[in-house]
Image (cartoon, rainbow, N blue to C red; front, side, top):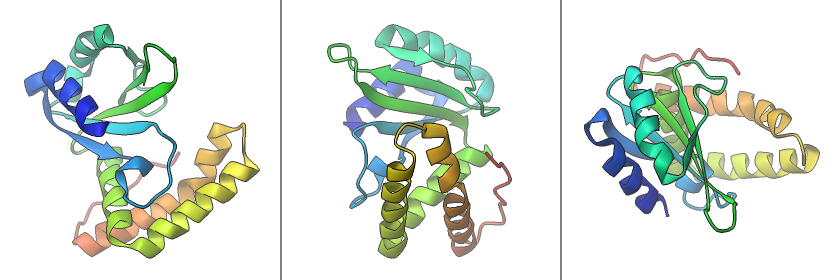
Amino acid sequence: MFAGLRDEIAGACGDLLTGVEHIGSTSVPGLDAKPVIDLMPVLRSSEDGPECARLLEPMGYRYLGEYGIPGRHFFLKDDAVSGERVANVHMFEATHDDAIAHLAFRDYLRAHPHWRDSYETLKRDLAARFPNDVEAYAEAKTDFVKQVVAFSLAESGSNHVYRRVR
């Protein structure tokens, strides 16, 4: 499913993007996830986000602007028949803190099954604690995510420091 959405977004936005990454839980083999694909199109320039929105909206991508994260261009895509969410699209420039963090987190969980399994356990526990509060659920994952991102950046030799706090 990711490949089809990636190709659709890349085909529409063309040279405005340098690529489209698969992020979120569905991008980590062996990690349980809701059937919603998170994609991260990488912009050559953040200023091109509104042009991508113009190109993607006729294809069913609902543009919500930054949606609480400065520098992000956020889209939702629902299935045209069922109305169920199909994808969340987080569009950033490659140097944005969140772009770096999304990839660092994904790559670390892919490479470290213990951390992947710990994240799955945490997600299950939080889903039970916050069944109807997406914001509280997301906030409760923050410390774990920041820790994994820090490990990933250190392991890769990156001197980047993830600064944004949700």
